[in-house]
Length: 322
Image (cartoon, rainbow, N blue to C red):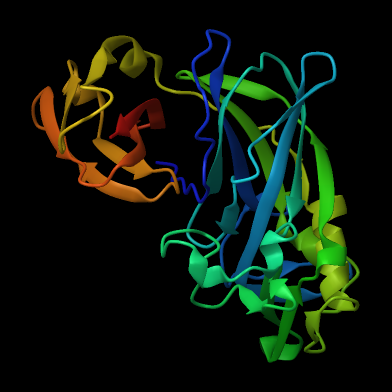
């Protein structure tokens, strides 16, 4: 089963419109044509073998170009911290958008000013801008690490390299031609991220350490801007039999007590129920044995109830806990 991680603060504005659809950006992690794996041998365009040991980056300031050149801006509060380790793909929830035909998607690698230079401890502990471990924050003056790309290269992989890119002047926008696929009530914009291109023309065999704004660290950010992302050829499907027989509901919505009832008539068509918060973090995972299931949500906020089947994510419903 494919896994997914959502690390974002999603749009909290008005969602009611018959033309709107829950829109997701899906990033497939790749090493060339192969699926990404940490600590596996790969090669850059200089023919140098290396291993990736850490790979994280921020994505912010999203927008979608669609329906004849229209541009829909995503709320600036959508902040995604992408971690390639352990995941086939990462998902960023862009919110309910009025979109039919996707033409391209735009985003920045890094954190925008003035947010980049604000105090990270002001955020809740589960926010992607809160201090991370290992750290993604360089300091108040320099702000966040936009990109952390670390690995081992050289003879017998004995040379450690570190590329930490940052700086307000290095906050670049990238535009990627893409299309959208409507699956189970969600509009999914799928991109491939080939991380071998993140070290295009960078010597990873001599133990380069660049923490800053103007050497190989800048080259790595520019490579992410120019080369890493492309439209994915992945065909995203959900099992038709599972979808047509689900017939499920969530009640009440909005929720005024701690309990929410989830009813899935054909409970055998799913593997589990996953409830995530607006950061994409899973707050409950339930393996139901009967159609009616009760879940407890103690904190106010917006949540997503996700039905997970053998083929992956099947359907999602948005609920509000008051």
